[in-house]
Length: 51
Image (cartoon, rainbow, N blue to C red; front, side, top):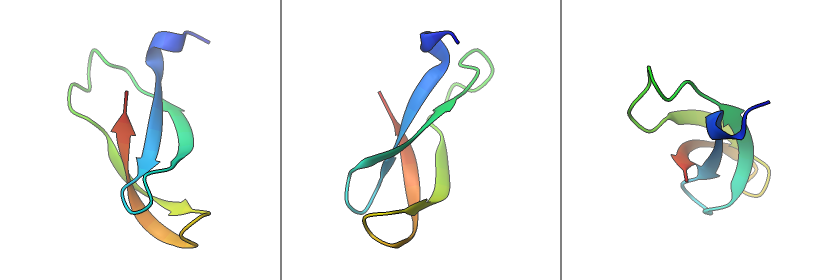
């Protein structure tokens, strides 16, 4: 699996990295933001892509 396609998703509330995912950086130029479940907050929070 190529490492240049991997991204980290960070919770916007507690700032912890909870998820890793892949994205095609040639087609998606903007940063990804998804609503995911945070284990630490124990609720669904928006998660933003980090470096």
